[in-house]
Amino acid sequence: MSGHETRSGSKPEIARALADSLADCGVKLVASLPDNWITEVIDEVDRDARFTHVPVNREESAIGLCSGAYMGGLGSAAIMGASGFMTVIYAITKINYSYEIPLLILITLRGAFGDHHKHHVSNGLYLRPVMDAIDIPYTIVSRPEEIPQIGKAYRHSRTFSRPTVVALTRDLLK
Amino acid sequence: MRYLECFRHLAKRRNGEFVITSAGNSGQAWWAASGDSEASFYLDASMSLSTMFASGLALALPKQRFWAFMGDGAFCMNPGMLMVERQMNLPNLVHFLVSNRSYGATSNAPLPSGPSCDFAMVARGMGLERVFTFSSIADLESGLDAAITQNASGHTFVVLEVEPFDAEEQRLPQPPFDGPELKYRFGRHLEMVSGATIFDYRV
Image (cartoon, rainbow over all chains, first blue to last red; front, side, top):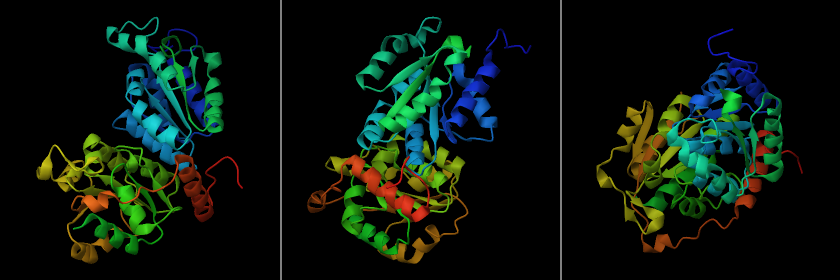
């Protein structure tokens, strides 16, 4: 057992399962910004030849990049932390809502029970209310057996012609 | 150089490129210059994201060529995009920075940097190598071919130094499309030209 494998469903296996889930639903481009909870996931995607991984400068750039990829027929996903997601409301509501462009976004469910970082209090208070306020469909994945929800969220985004969010919990990732 | 004159010149020199315009005056100017309703995506709702959007397209369709316009006001909101563009280094994408030193769509409110910012130097500082600046139609006539060549070695960044819209130009019509219509007009045209499947069904 490696140093950070502490239990069944430990980080490398979860990262791989998340990458498999993305690949299975047709994602070929992944744009990311890091968050400590998803470092392993981003590393996994970066190593995985099934994906073109583009680390971006800010989360809004990921929204623009993935939206353009959709218009070119390339499946994509944006991976970011909760705080980053809170900065992309303009981009989502302007680009994806105005032009009805699908997009799958994976975020961390920061500020929820078990997150000991005080600076994520704001996400605990406002992340879900903000998602509700812009009527963006989202699902919370907290156990390995729920990872297939990613494929459903991807397909729903394309049916709905708007973004969907999969929020990954600390219990899943750490 | 006059903004509209510059865009009319670019429209004449265009050779099959797909065009993405930005929030600001570029959509108005390109609509006036080209009247294009199929191979241009007027991404008006997108402060600072037109070239990222175009990068996604250019990555997805490497055999097609893309031009993306962005005002310097939008650029100031997200200059770090150039780091991503440098990293992707897509040879089929030209980023046109339309520098009128003002927020043109909001009554020409002045840019914080005024005339002092050297956008070409910013781009070089971010590692871009194919960087061009044009300040007149004569410059474009003599140098544009090198900037928009189909055999570019990598990503291209072009600064267009233009005058802000005057009062009459500010009244130029906006492209008259709702978002979903643009999406389908552009996407269906792209499907026809490239053979790619953009949407989940064909008509």
